[in-house]
Image 1 (cartoon, rainbow, N blue to C red):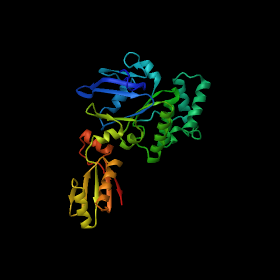
Image 2: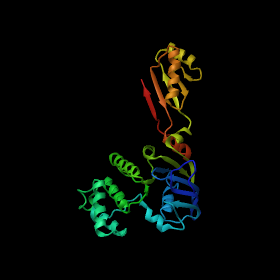
Image 3: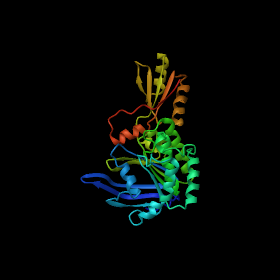
Image 4: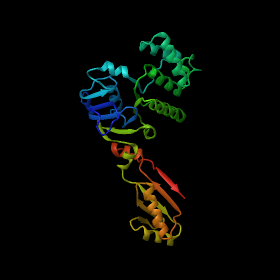
Length: 325
């Protein structure tokens, strides 16, 4: 897929009509992707949606049944060896060998990349220091915490200096501190020009890291865009005003005639996208009426809402509210 003339950024990964089935089960039903170089792309979706299959196809681990793709400028089907030389892959399950030390894991990876011995030792030492693993380097990897094993896993992926990294649910099972440390590592990689293709079950993770997000459902891309663009496709944002004085409530209801009233709780609810402009307009109208609300709550859709709306989940998403008193 060629780069659009309106977007000069080079393309790291592109796909058109990518398809994959296992028996009677269609996993990918013609998906299109375009991922600019030096960005983070997050692929979301429920279990079984096809996220891992997409990663496996684009990293040459399995063959697509149909469609075309280019990775790092190389045709996926015609030149898979060049694709492999340009990418790194960290799967859901660690590739770390727990029976040997962290340093030995790194040196083994350097050998697999055919690095000269002195170069392999230099790269190993640099990456162990970069990922804060120098002190643990001579200890068996089986003694590492989950966060340390994940850091070692990514360090091993970087031995070959890939420009595109596929991270398939890299923070699954990590505690919040380790997860935040992993986010820091991903941001540092991208700041150095690396492209990151991320699959995740953590919606906050995608919100924090991704330049663009796609939601995969039933083998198709249900929606794609920035986090803010996706949030705007889900209705339900509103401003809620609560009053303790019935007279103030009635004056506000008169000034904000389009608001949905609740006389029992003395509250008004107005549709809103949560923007500063809309909030200021509501407050200006209250000021003009000489009324002050006792509590103002802004409720905006978040990625949980987007996920449940696009994947037809039955679970009620949590509220994302900011209350001003």
